[in-house]
Length: 236
Image (cartoon, rainbow, N blue to C red; front, side, top):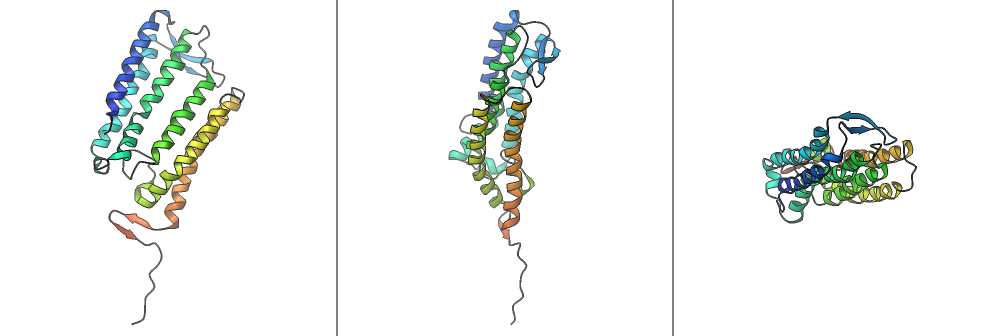
């Protein structure tokens, strides 16, 4: 791959570790690890868990995806932009968790009341899980590891290509709307609803879109195409 995603994730985890080390003595014990819709802490755990859980996930999640990618023959033959896009998507969870850990969670440990910034959370979802993901989805060629993996995109190369191309502007547009909304929608229930509708709703729409594309044309399976229209017998 263009840039080894696990190595990149490891670097992010090390940076997070150093950042946490310098904040360790100033953080309370226990520290908040879960918050309600009003961004107030509702669940606490030991300080060591709060400082190490997300950095461990930063490496673990990309590593698991990378292991599967190494056994995926369709990924092995990719080059150019698709190869870059696969690497970016594998490392995306690490990048997202890096921002959450260093600029949201650790700041909550510093604050007197342990609250997080819900606007920053929604903006982070918009930037990385929608806009950045959508940009890379459009370049990912059919495989069984990375992308919008639905039963319909996996069975049809046509459905895969059209769905992933379509996802680029769907996720980027809805991500931009969410990014703007994060700074204007009232926090609490309104912001939570807007975030879930725009984020999860856009992915649900793409799943439905893959079903429609799959059922509207040719069914591609492996190296042959099976036309779904019934065959009409011709007279001799």
